Length: 78
Image (cartoon, rainbow, N blue to C red; front, side):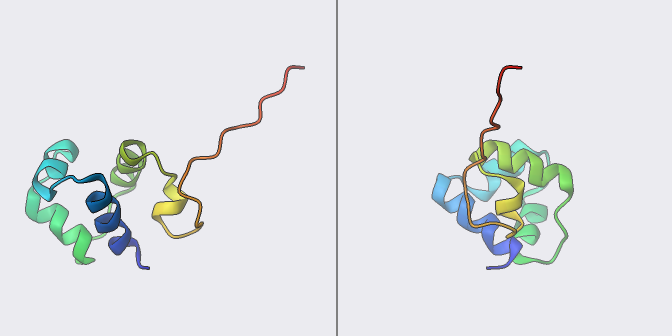
């Protein structure tokens, strides 16, 4: 799956319209549509904002891992 296809999949899974998501990202709806169609490159800031919204890692959104969830750090006391 291509990066831009992942954007649509995550948005549809969350039940959010392109228009509402564009408002959240402070971009025009046509700009967001072009992200999903692969016509425009998605800025890093948008990937970060979307990963936080959807609760997935940026690596998942970029297709670098199949793990949707953000792994918790293993913090141990010294």
